[in-house]
Image (tube, helix red, strand yellow):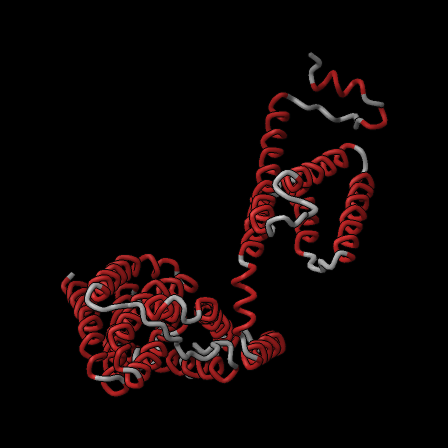
Length: 440
């Protein structure tokens, strides 16, 4: 049997670069990359084959997509020891083939170009694997499959998005693109701590997290019940979820138990959200928060599970929450964030650590995001991490108490009875943890 080097000798001299020396180790690496390219193609092909309506013919499926990745891989490999124009010509030929397929599909009344675009991407992914962008190719491949497989959900989401949602998102995007480059990246104010660009970055970040939850609520609709939508609503705002469900319980007495569970789950999601928010500005502080936040999250899940055993959770209602990308909401958060930064620093300066705790309790009345970001930043500039952790937990307790009050004033008695028990457990566990931190 001829070795690879012997095979190369059979090729015309002008096709082989003078410095090509392929060892057995190189060949092994080459085969490994080829296998990755094939697997990426197979993953995309599997999804295309699975989503194809029964009896309908498609250009590419479970067999064709791996071959397309191999073609892209081979084109990149050949071009590496000949000329980049070889890759260009192969790609153009492939593009003509796909374009022809699309024309015939369109003539038959099938105008969607999703599969055709996927084949182009599969070709390029095969090339990326050869060029050693293996992780990137894998991530793009998984992303492609995700978008392809979520066809129904994405179309459902689009159908549920209102014109106001689109308009609000576009407005915030335009304002951000125009304003952000103009905002100075330096600190101002009496304590030299207000950074306009940092504040707006945090506004976009918090709005982005909230928007993820908003999208999930839109995707799920009311079909998954108040428990699941309440859970997703916690990513948007657990306080907003509490207010919305409290009003629903007053309008519909039979929803009290379900609304209470939704409120408790939304409050439980608040803890992982705090960890994500803190980790953006201060990874070290986020790690200090990991244990208490994990304890609070587990406590919330256990109490929610226990409550689910007491209440029927098959009632379906939607949660009324505004698009977090609304310009008015974003600007309001920016103002609140700036105010919390100033008050917290002033409280520390005049009252010491006790002033930080007081500011944390006050900030938690509206939202915990602003105080978490503030303390995460202060912990990088002099405030001890233990004080920042205690301050954040105090804000969480304050926010939990506020949600309990919301259920009393805006919900019915049945809701208050259920919700206050669950929220009370969360508050007590949090207060006990603060006590332990003071003793230690």
